[in-house]
Amino acid sequence: MPDSPQIAADADLDQLVRRLRGLSRRAWSQRREPVRRLVADLVALGPPGHAVPDLPDHALGDVVAVLSHEALVFQAAQQDGRRDEVAAAVARALTETR
Image (cartoon, rainbow, N blue to C red):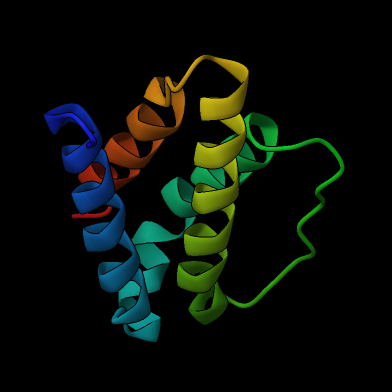
């Protein structure tokens, strides 16, 4: 069973993805850079070989969802179940996109 830090990390990811999927074009103008930094972090933390093309802002919620999942699984396999770096990157983006 997942421990409470894991549950918190999953809740942060769910909240962030919901937030990103609901942003208006105007709201994206203030949140674009933190989300693009998160995408770059997730690519670096996930399995090798990913490259994210230049996508429109409205697609980034889905990109974050997919890359986060892949990075969490990859990090857990590499670090005996630890997913701290991915959780920290997601939490940082959640704060920066308020």
